[in-house]
Image (cartoon, rainbow, N blue to C red; front, side, top):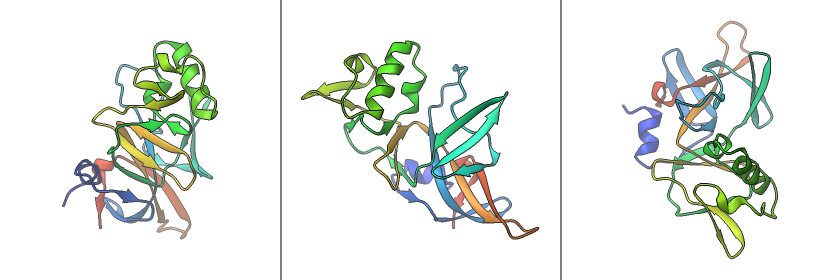
Length: 183
């Protein structure tokens, strides 16, 4: 049986609440965390594997006395479109650019319908009729959510939920998609 990562590479869409098999037993997918797999970056780009703290539609964790939050997406599939509007599009790769003014231009345009005047300078973003669009790379995945917020990333982690065998409480955990099989 293929792991979740390979299934996504084959083009299948995987959604929240899908039953999965872990080394520790069965669980359900709660969501997906998009990130950029840049081994040369000093920035924290994804949560650590293991127990997760979920607050609304975000995963929250602390590392070296600093608080980090990442959006949780409800489905993932292989990227199929040529371009995506930048407004409300989370692209982790663009949060880790060497030129801080490009990061600022992207974040401003992601959060506001009126784009930053310098967003066209950002890698993979082009203006079409005055609106910024992100042109994804071939190896990137598309992440959807229950809101208008979307994501594009070349790597991802999976948040699963299962009942604690000790007290029956709900546990959230972060897994590598290569360690998960679809039931």
